[in-house]
Image 1 (cartoon, rainbow, N blue to C red):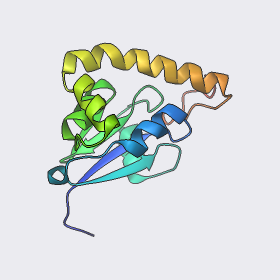
Image 2 (cartoon, rainbow, N blue to C red):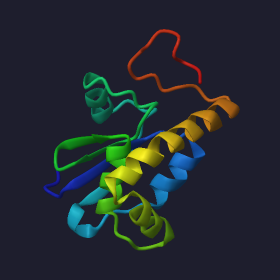
Image 3 (cartoon, rainbow, N blue to C red):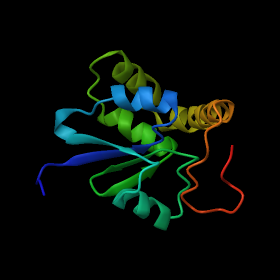
Length: 136
């Protein structure tokens, strides 16, 4: 195992918007290496998220310095760790660097994601195994 720091982002790779954003976002070198994790694939961090009772269908997760950030806190943390290089990184930092803005906009973005996945006929991840919660 490497001694280098990591920033893990757990997101729904089946969501075209989430995938676009997460493939283009990058963190500053001082924050560590960015590791992108598909929430639809079993992983240790997904098990950790589930044990914490966090519904991955309702929010992305960022783990940095051993701490879990969820939903608006995750996008805020990722924006503040961003390299600020390239359009997506600069835009994310400009918009989500303030917690209030992230808390206001994130539910709107999550609702748009859920609507898009419903239109595309995708299933929920349902990491919490909630009965009847497989479809959007």
